[in-house]
Length: 375
Image (cartoon, rainbow, N blue to C red; front, side, top):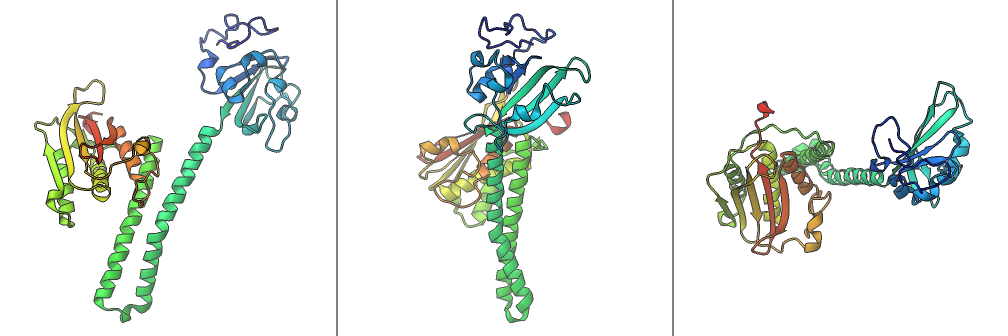
């Protein structure tokens, strides 16, 4: 492994890149995603990779050859100097590492630091101190995102649960005072709120599986045209006029193997957005298309468009992020994030743009797929 990368030529005691090899592994420290700082048996820095430069804002040419505590002046969260506390060269001879912990660079920049003490023999003197640095910003963004998710779902759960609790408590306490029609109305409200709670929990589970890469697909033959038709019929049965929808299915379509429940979830979300937030005719085009996955020639494309105001240009790049909502507020803002995760789990792609009629246009493409029993 080259350990003198980014070094300044001629620095005292600092090996050049071509001279500092580690057992022929052939790994350039600058290729590592984490910061890497290595000090020799005298405590002088012999490696300071590109990621360490980026994280610390210290040039490798300034750090190489310096004492470790000067090149990397770390403090704990209480303001104590870390190298004086840990004393890697003069501390306990049985220590071989420092576990990961949050430390501060000058200026208060927080980093995650781990260290390993390399000894030629057990209980022998330290020959190398290997320090790994990781910027905490990505972790903080993830933690903030998780906190926002929990707060959003908790807020959305509070309203239906309060309603369920209120109506059930009222019915139990004053059952005889209500007419059958009043009881039915309250029970229908409880049922609707219970469905809302179930849907929110399902969204939370979907996001957890998408983020962890554990979204399971049970591929079966899917007739995309028939699937869209069922959703349209459900909307018409619920009171929408039949001429609100225009379904165009190109024939022949390739045989599509996908998870029918997940495909229904995608179609339900896209059609609901078009009906609730769009205007005019909702047009759904189902066509054969080039497969978004290499090695397959054909796929299936579904385009859902409306004639409403559309999505502002400045919001296009945020449509599939968590908590994005359109101009009309309501819901958790998680639906399109889940849709994107489902489509990509199938190996497909989804895009958003402006429809010919001026409204929003969502288009997703799925590869023909492989049956579950052949995967």
